[in-house]
Image 1 (cartoon, helix red, strand yellow):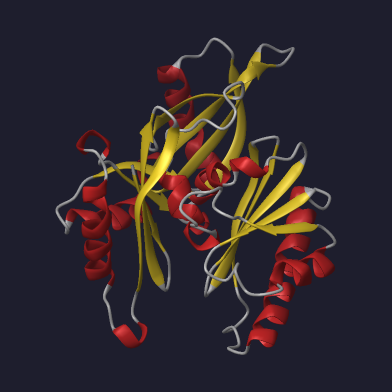
Image 2 (cartoon, one colour):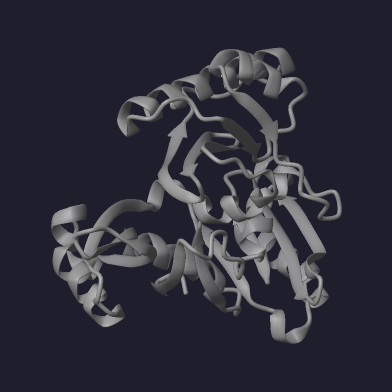
Length: 303
């Protein structure tokens, strides 16, 4: 699988092959977009795909992309336990306009069906939706390159796969620190609770000490809003991903600001790939199921 992370300042691509001993990294590429290099997005995508795709066995040459947290709408719903895929999709299509304030024709949706049932005979579903135009705009980038996208995923689920080795029993937050915004994803025992993008309040400073202080303030603001809106206490663990996660001393600074254990995603032995490639790595290992007892299947957009 080829995981493609399109950021505001760079494109990251990771090729992961699945064999008898599990997943292994075959190749990776990272190239800046715009800036002094004046590289346009499609040229960068073409270069990164050309560098990495041939490293995969032919039958595993599938492209996986993701939609950013700003384009994703999440909702937990309950359905009768005996509903099949067709009945669930019909229910979602009928109720979606009321849930998301968009016409059903303007939404793509998918869902995760939870295995457990409550005493009322219903099953919980994590509903994931995005505006149709957002998805089509992203797919057009690849159609113009004459390549086919096989799977559309989300930041939240891909990052959860990428940090599977750092499991904790309770509440965990993953922060994806980009150049213009951070994304906060919260999980409890492998289940997604919250996912949101927070644009920074102005441009980040260039000096190392100033940027560390500023990021700490931005993270604290995002954590406080998460705690208020989601009604959650501080997480037991916070993991950092993204291009700014490797700033020296940042985990210690964030731990002091947020009062929680903070670590950087280390790549779990995947050829030294660290936090900057965490999202692309999680996308490329798309076939992994984090919690087989909780996740029974996917349908619709992300299959």
